[in-house]
Image (tube, rainbow, N blue to C red; front, top):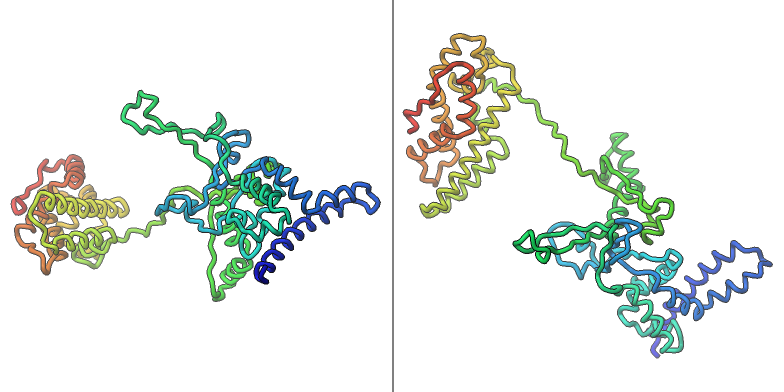
Length: 449
C-alpha cells in the first residue's frame, strides 16, 4: 500500500469516525452520567454496529431529485432520482441547469434520515455516496477490514438511488391525461402524465433567494442605497414573494431538504406587469408626426427587418410578396395604434393650440373630435379628401426609410399609400368618425389608386 492510498483510506476512516462521534456525543449530552442507557448508546455507535444497522434501515428512505410527497403528503407512488446530467438539455431553466453540485433530496421514514446524512459526509469534495457510486476501493477498506461485509453495506447503501418498483401514480397525486394520438375517443391514444416536485431545483432557488435577501453583502448594498452611497455590488429584490409551507409542523415528513428549509418553499410572483406608460405629449412644434412615429421601438424594428429583406434582392415570388405585405401590415398597425394613443390621451381641440404646427391634413386625422366645436374644421373634415393626403405622407415617409440601395419608387409609393387607406383598422376607425359627423361614407383615393 503506497502512502497516497493510505492517506485516502485514513481520510475516509476519520470522516466516518467523526460523524459517528458527533452524533453519539449529541445524544450522550441528554443523559446523566449515571444513566444506565449510556453504555447501550455508546455500543450503538461502534462503527461496525452502526454501519450494519444503517445498511438495514437505508431501505426505508429513497434519494430523489423529483418527489411526490410535496404534491400531497399522503400520496403513494413513484419518486425519481434524475441527476442533471441524465436530463435532456433545454433552453428553458430547469433541473437540467443545476450542474454537478446539485442538492439531492431524500424521502421516506424520517427516523432513517441519519443514514442519508452519513452518506452526504464529504471527503475530497465528494460525498461518501458519490465515492460508493464510483466503486472507490479506499472507502471500502476504511469501512471494514472484511471486504465482503463492506461490499454488502455499500450495495445496500446504493439502493438509495435505485428506482423502487414499477412506475406508479396515486389518487392524491397530480395526474393529467395527454392526447398523443389522433382519436380523442380512444383511451389508448392518451398518455398519463404525473408531474412531480422538482425538489433539487426548489432547493437551489431557495438558497439563491436567501442569499439575495439576508446575506451580509445584500444588507450592506441595501444600506448603501438608503444612505445614497456608492457600493461595489448591487442587490436583488423579489417583490410579491410568497412562501408555501410544506409539511406543517412536521416538514421532515415531506423530505430532508424540506426539513432543512423548515418547510419554506418560495413562490415567485406570477402576475402581469403593471406598466407605467409615459404620458402622451401633444405633437407641438413639428410639421408632421411621422418622424416621431418612426422613433417607436417596434416601428424601427419592423422597418429595419423589411429593409434588410429587400436589400437581399429577393426573387419576385408569392413568398416575397407575402413577406413584404406582412411587414407593411405590422407598420400600419403601429401607425393606427400611435394615432389612437393621441386621440385617447389628448383633449379634443388640442390641434387649435397656437403651438400646433402640424399640416392641416394631420390635424384632421389626429384630432377628429375638434369638429364638434369648430364648424370650419368640421366642414373641412367632412370633405374627406385628407385621408388621401395622409396615405401619401405615409408613402413618402416609408419610401424615405427604405431609400438607398432599394428599388423603391413611385410605384411602391402608391402601393404603400393604398395599403394604408385600405387597411381594415384604419378604415374602420374612419367609418366610426364619419358616421358620427355625417360625413361621406367613402375615402377618395385618386392619387393612391
